[in-house]
Image (cartoon, rainbow, N blue to C red; front, side):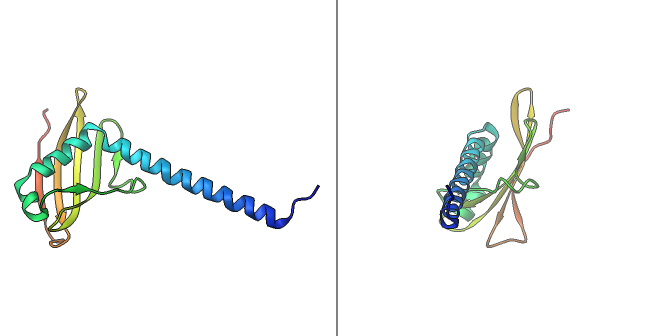
Length: 133
């Protein structure tokens, strides 16, 4: 029994759709997992509580999907974390950068900065913490 080329192409096409959809789904799941971590929630809480960020972005401040493939800016190994998160508000949008360190099972945001689309040459400092020695 032989299978026609047309049937093989259809099988390959549907296989590609299944693999692609699965990849997108898994990426969204991983991003949602990162969003549930303490360092991520604390960093966004600090941004939303910062008077300057609220002034420039407006309320509510929303975080958008970030790229997991950007290993230079989006990284966590259980001890250190750094992320580049797109954020928006009713007045402006920008990119929120934050760095965190885990000490004694507790995450500390060591630095956080907001870069606004309307002012790309400057960053608003949200947090600067020196680590305990």
